[in-house]
Each structure stands twice: as C-alpha cells, then as structure tokens.
Image (cartoon, rainbow, N blue to C red):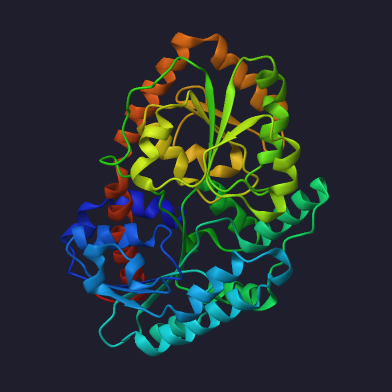
Length: 406
C-alpha cells in the first residue's frame, strides 16, 4: 500500500482527534503553501510560516504567524523581469541558498513537530529537524525535477528555442531533499509516478491534491453566446501554448471560436506568440478577485501542458461551471473523469485537442452538462478543506511512523 493510500485509509478523523501539532511551513513565495497554512490554522494547529515574500505580500490574517527574509528574494524577482541580456539564474540560486540558511537558523527544532517545506530551499533545516527526532516533509508541486528537466529540454528542442537552464546547485539541493526527507508530498498521480520512475520508493510518497476557494470561484453570467476557449496561466513552452495554437488555428480562422490568453508570458515563448498573434486576445495578468468573471466568459478551459504537478486553474474553472480539456501531465485525473467533466488528452497532440474542442462546439447541451458536472465534482472534492485534512492526516501518520506522539 502506498503512503497516499495510508492517508486515505486512516481518514481524517484520527488526525483531527490527535494532539495539536506545531507545524513550520516554508516556501520561497506563496504558491499553495499559504493555503496550507490557512488550513492548519483552521484545524487548530500551531503554525509558523517562513517565506521570501515581503510581509506586504503575505495574507493579512497570516502575518502574525509569518517570518520573512525578503531582500534578496525581491531582487531575484526583479531580475527575472529585466530584459533578457541581463537575465541569469545566479540571483535565483543565491536566493534559494540564502533562504535555506536563514530557515535553518530561524526554525526551533525543540518545539517544532513538522517542517513542511517547498522543495529547493536546501536540506539544512530538514537535517536539523531530523537530528532532533522531528519530521521533515519535502513538498514538491511538480514532477520529479529530473523528469521535469527531461520533458522541458525536449520541448525546447522541438520548438527550436534555447533550452531551460537548471542550476546545478538547485538540482543538488532538490535531489538531497528527495533522498533525505521523511516523506515527499505531491499533488497528483502524475507527479507521484514521476518519482517512482526515478527510483523513489512509493512508500515515501503522499498524494494530497490541491483545492480551490469555492467562495471566490463560482459561476457568473456570461455576457455573450460566443464559444470561447480560455488558456489561463503563464504562456510558455512548458504549458504547451504552441500546441494550443496548432489545435485552434483552423477553428479560429473559420470563426468557430475565439481564444483568450490570461496570465503572464514567458520570454522563451514570445516569438511563438508573435507568430500567432492573429489567433488570440491577450487579457494579461488578472488578480484572483476578478478571475471568476473571466472564467465565466469562457466555454472551455484548455490546458495543453507538458509538465505540471496539478494546475490550480483547472479546479478554478470547474468551480465556475466550465469544463476542462487537459493533458495527462496536468494532474487532471485527480480532479475529473475523462468524458464526464471534461476530456484528458495526451501531451503534444494538437489534433486531440482540436477534436475535443470541435465536439464541444457541436454538442451544446452535452457541454453544458459537462460544465454542471464539473461544478458538482469540484464541490464534492471539498475545496481546500479536504486538502488540509489530508495533509494533517499525513503529518500524524509520519510522526507515528517515526515513533513520535501523533
């Protein structure tokens, strides 16, 4: 039995009846870790957050529990937004190393039960926790980093762009974390399989799929009857935007649908977007507060990604009553069933995407039924509450396995 199955088998009741835990949550930015912190507080646990985000970028209700170390992180983020001749991974690597050392200095292993850290901050704090008999969890939001590296290098070769650079120091830190942590938590079956294929024992892996804020994401009126395909997220080679253009070009040109791109644009994908600028309307980055209205103007969300852990935008669209077409490498199988709430297609297959979009264009009633099923499915998944309960059950199971009080 895999550890993900252990968590499901033991259920959440036992965890909720266990003693209160002191949980340290670390992440270079926000990601899903702030949502995890909200859940641990909701479940009555004691929480400390260690982040590179400046305090102004931390949710107001989390600030009393948060420690920040933001100077170098802010510089690293700014460097990413500079023109390409000045871009370098040196800042990002130094950011991770600096935050990792700060985390090791700042965490109190005497009073902390669990360190749940987003991967890449380095193993120093985790080793410290283990030396004191406490638990260390590596929280990975994507596939195994070597799987990710292979997929993205192949993808950049296919499109003729410069390959992505994986800093050797970052790779070394991540691989050390995978080897030494008490457990690795991932958000999807796809991510778990990638770790098993890279030789990580299945009993070390837990699957805790992400949730969605149902109070924020809900259906809103659609302003028109136009069939509209949405792509939400960073327009990048990793997210398969080139295959999206290939799939939709004949449909857009014949007036059967339109395409909205919502989110940032990765520099490596800019030439591809320039070649296909006649296919889409660019809606830019949208604050989370306005995303529900954007989703509600769509007919379907398409996620053609080559590699993801679990794309959060899928659940957000489903909560707005929008069906999803996504690849096998998006974590979609943990959110919906193929043919019921949407469709799951292979990676790098624009014809499969086109076929499913055409089906939706031609089957209005069935598409509406899919959207309604998507909304009901995401409600059944329990939003972020279920995620938090699974994580807390995991914590107690890991502590019990280590022989500590759970």
